[in-house]
Length: 245
Image (cartoon, rainbow, N blue to C red; front, top):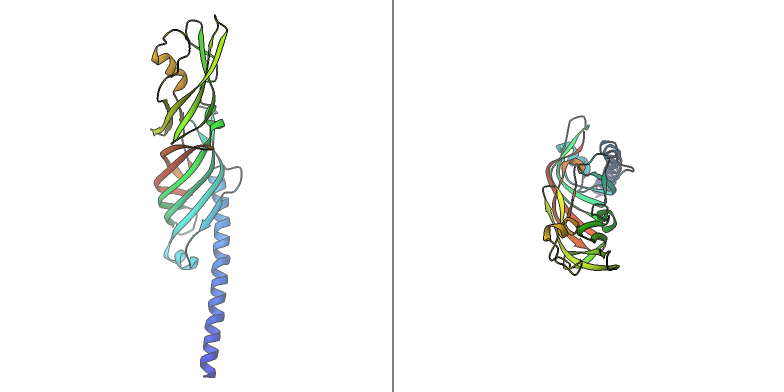
């Protein structure tokens, strides 16, 4: 019995030591991965990296990780225009089936899904906020964006009739979609901006706009988009997503 007790004690102690070693190893790996991502994606600060699953060392021995979560607080995405970026907030991506090279210099996820937010203030930079003539003596511009409810964006359009000295701001409910890596905003109906009829295409030059989002981390792509309280929530996904190297 004494020998059995000793064996049980040794098993418990060794098991505890293994758990401690495993947690130390995963913490070290998360830090290394965060530093690698920061350098690869040219981030201002290191992202959050959370390696899921236990034990970690067994996964490493098998050459892949089941689940890795990455969080980037502030990401400057390319827009397709030289020198212009769009800020994406709280990008959270869930990477499945992460395999890595023998020297651990590169890692690739089989699949990835995630969410992020573009604030209305950031999206407003894309809209035409300069007074633009839509008809003789009538100008219009977008002066604000906000949540319109039910997944819609409320676009505030300011119209000015110079001859009458009239200036009015009208709300326009708009649908937001994703097309070809672009966030598209399209007015459901057009506002009346003066006493005379204005050609639809001239008004849509103001109310409708798009924001391209290129080169997201690891090559993930836009999938879906929806207007929410604090901005536009985007959903991203990808396959063979490069985490490092």
